[in-house]
Length: 380
Image (cartoon, rainbow, N blue to C red):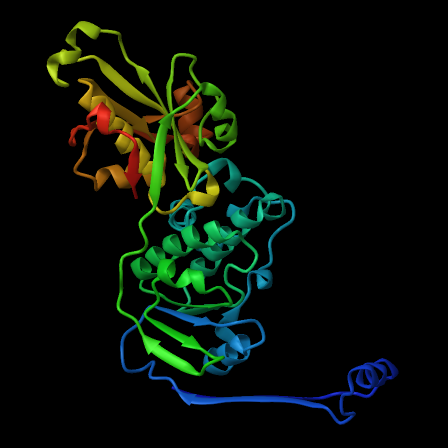
């Protein structure tokens, strides 16, 4: 692919311009002209993700438009309804399950926030839902200008991992234009082009950086930071055993567990038929850190901890992302599934609100146990 781009702008000599020229001894016939010309071997290999990166003003947008034309978009180019929830802004051709899958795949996994208008979301949530909307168009190629420019760098890293997985899974092509070098190792692009240096190179797919989490026991008060993000209820049982996961000293995930019955005399039975049972009560990951498996990892870590103490560990969930993860995880054994609804009247369910029926899945942890004395750090 040949890149030939040129930008030329002649300065109009207004009174203010003349005053600036006089202060800084600039020529009155100042002309701004730049050009980029090189060959990019994008046809040589099959690729899914590209990265155009460099400092502000180096020509990233100009280069992207010269290479990809109308495929270049910004999050601000999307139109959102002011009074409808974000799920109503997706193409009508998509089913609800497809929209949910897209939202979860980019790390926006908080169902209560799906029902909000776009304008009420945080910048990080707006960025993620915009990515999901761009992918929902199912275009062969999407080029996102100003990628991660308006979000915290931690959010940018996590969102890049989630986005990369989704793009490769759907078989799409995505190019990010950004001034932030830190997204490269998290986005894992197939190629990188730096307009400031006119340098292009292919990359080999590598593992993203490891996330080091510290998991500690915590008081129930820590739940206040997480309760609004739980997909069902913000209530927490008074007897719950609570754990808090920290990343670089910041709280990112909360997990609470409850005893099914207090049969302590059988705790030494190694999780057998008569072992005391403990159930997952609440596990919530903050929105800015969703999409890289932190919630699933913390949940399994706690399950391994309790199994090491001799408990039979069970979990019940209806969250699509958690169900999909458990179904593909050998550490969890699927036990049963049942349909439930917020309405008790079956006639109302079938004839007035059948869409309110949801599947509830029961799992049992059968993976390796974790000795209490070694329980502290978790790698994701």
